[in-house]
Image (cartoon, rainbow over all chains, first blue to last red; front, top):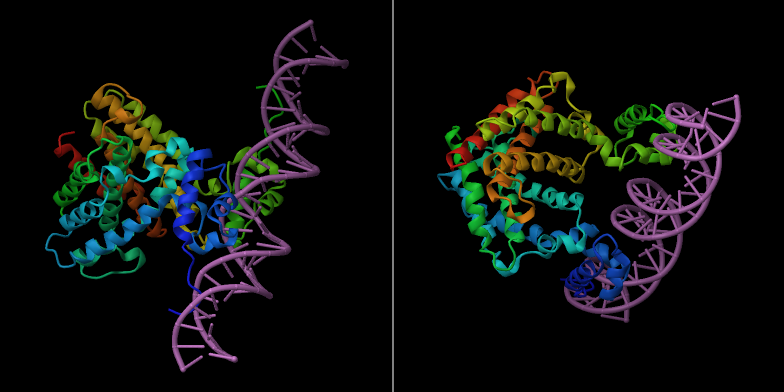
Length: 201
Length: 201
DNA sequence: GGGAATAAATAGATCCAGTACAAGAATTAG
DNA sequence: CTAATTCTTGTACTGGATCTATTTATTCCC
């Protein structure tokens, strides 16, 4: 590990941003304000985050790694569709009642509009990509690039993600007394997996 | 209809933009270039489009109206889930082999990145919202605002949209000899609907 | 015809996210 | 101590988006 060590700025930036978003809303908060409160220069912000909106989805981005691991552990499962479902539940296991991301629970306070909420879905496309690749590898045995990929694999991936998104949204909306995310996910994801299984996957 | 009539700028802007996107890519094309080629001022652009990315998704936005109509025609169907499936197929019927939106077929030429594709999904959320409201009204008899909405309705809506997105993506990627979009949609959407039906919806 | 009323087009200015590049500061390996 | 490495900062710029005000085109009505 050579070179100048990173200041502990990432966390400070996240916290400063959360405060400001809650105080005055997302749109009215400038990157300059965030960096000022965090005590770093404006440019440093872009050393840690690619964009302002990235601040909202750190947990989601982190869950991508969790999903990667969960799928890797199931690389030889004999029921790939079931494995995907399991992997999603395992990934969601970390989200207990008190660990709902602010952007989901406080989006009204922050003034998060439809565009921005959609940006969250956008990031979830990486999750879908992961699931798709897993399914293709498990069900078709290879990973053909691009257009050759089976339509069904992508469909499962995106449909399952949609179902999961619905669960996450409702989970967050249910307030502090909510049950763990997993219990929501089960109800929304399983029917999708079941449907594709019956369709011959 | 009083007041100054709109010049026929909307279409000219769309065409100028498409040309430029194909010539030099989306990112390198500025709104100023588009308006210059269309022969209007830069500000006029924002009379017709809310943002640059909106240019990419005019067909998608238009299909929202088609979906609205298709669902309205089925307001009293005795099989709401089947009605949603039908409505999607009807909406897709307009997209024959030769009517694939440029943004989908030429996204590599245009240099459309993940971020921008996500913006497309974002717009599709409006479709999901529509489906969700239809399902709630048909299956629960009312349209409760906000958090009271049944989780399953949103799950179906988002999952079905995901499945549809997969179909659309693959359809566009399959080149000029592609079959109509409907034949792709059937294969991806039906399993989802079927799965939720068996789950008790 | 000749104004109000209305709506669209334009002009000018500003804000701010995001990018690019260069210079400086902190650290480690040798 | 020097060189290589990497984080941090300063400065400048591009371009999307918003705002306000002004001009231009059209219709309604007297």
